[in-house]
Length: 210
Image (cartoon, rainbow, N blue to C red; front, side):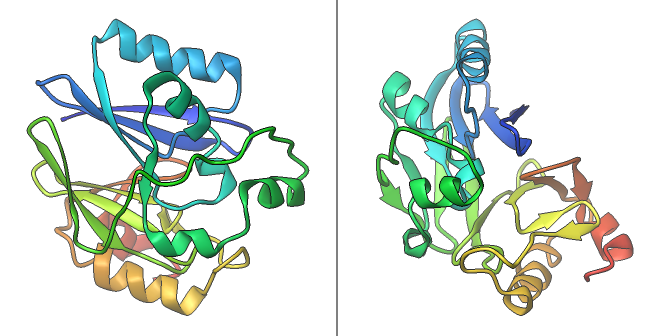
């Protein structure tokens, strides 16, 4: 599996484009918020002759969904996420709270994803792991074959997601990290929603919250 990482919008969200030898691709947390960012993503997809077939959201905080509208308009794809994420305020209310203006609302879900669901594209399979606490029902996406996990804002390098936003709960978050992420093999690479990558072993040894 190939992993292309983009850093988008003023909140510096990591957007991940995954594809394999079949050229079928999956996108996680499209944070592209400007015409230049959208063009950068589109040009990469076109240059590598990739077929984008799925859009995933780890959670629905505004910075992780700003590019969903573009993906729907350009590729006809609605996002997939856990249904309980819809309990949070609307995109408009979230962005207003942070002084950001958007002139569109989300498209709604293509389908809802539950804990342990499998998401397939090409010859690759991801497993959804429910890791709430930063948000009501944040999902992490684990690829056993490639020894990696995409954790959204649940777990960062030597840090955890903030829990003072909508649906946050630190006790629930730490429990989810310990039970769903740190039980994976030590060499599992962690690709977070912000900042640099890490590994399960590094987080066990150095993360002060754990």
